[in-house]
Length: 478
Image (cartoon, rainbow, N blue to C red; front, side, top):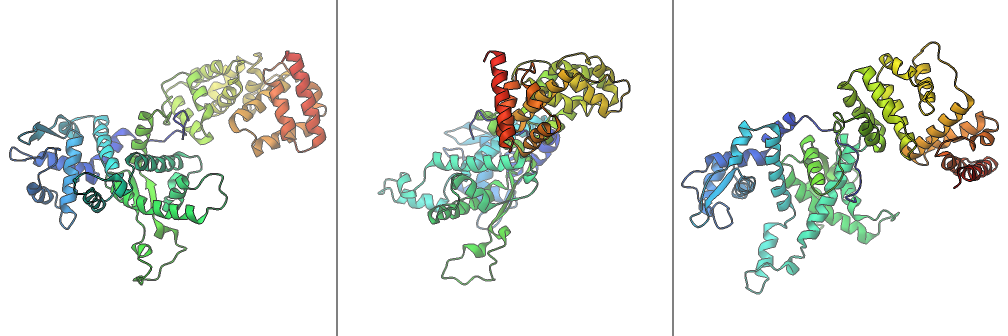
């Protein structure tokens, strides 16, 4: 993804609901509990981590047991320090106190809570990009006794690893906010790994690429296990039987066709919020449904121009909820005017928005019946709503509206099958369409006729369209 890309809008839960989710995540709730547990006798090392002899007490405070208890307690403490829930008072003495952020978890706004959670997320994401502890120990030992980390021996590039994880999470975000409802279902881990490994132009992955995908899956399995406790994802890990050594006999038969055994991951509503915040911080344009609710109709029509249909519909509903129907209709119609390149698509979005307003908008539509740019649109709306005494459109208005509609569809969908069907229908229903169409006084006339020539399957009709486009350009002086 380029950071200049406009991503599909995310549908976020209310901040109060997300804040409750954040407070209930194991990572943040443990960090907060240790921040309240810490006292005058608590000591930290030079890096701000709990000294080893206090880790058992910290683990006991959290109700942790087993071989990972000390490591989990250490992570919770590190999150508490990184997020400001705990503050180091004296680095030499290693003393601490509760940080200012701790009070925000109980007395702050939902946004305050979410900001603390975002800090916890960054800590966990950083940890997820680091190799396992055993590998680090081996790498340090391989540094010829120097005690320094030998990255070459570890075969670990911190920047590349972070970039890989960011790429995977970016693709998971796109699947979640996409128009096809893919975000409602968990994503198979092999498909997610392949999305960042397999080149787009590779029809059949090579054995080398498939091996890279398999390696990536194992890395992601470890990483998503770490990211689930912070509330970023819901994760069903890879079946342990699939990772057994070739020489070992699996404890139970392995069904290679069951994709769920290879891991399933889904972004949580809190995770969607967190990834969007990170994308915004990185310079991406990552809108959310509702962003335009307080803005003018011009911002609504321009903003939703690049939205998928369902997202544009939802955004428009948010916008209309805050306005009186008749006033909203007048504002939408005023914003739909224009001869610039984006105007046809604005008028299409306006027409779609007006379909949600209801009959209260009728006076506004009647006011623009004689408007050259809006008169055709108004007649369509009035006819669809069963209005009486609607004056018939002139032939010039019909053709202008036709060109405007095709130009809008071109901007919205490109050379889609729906547009191809529209083009074929126009040429079939209107005898001598191209003899008249090239004369239409619309800025997009030539472009529309060229597109019709490109899209129509009948070579003779396509040639007529291209000739008409040439005449239109000559008339416009282009």
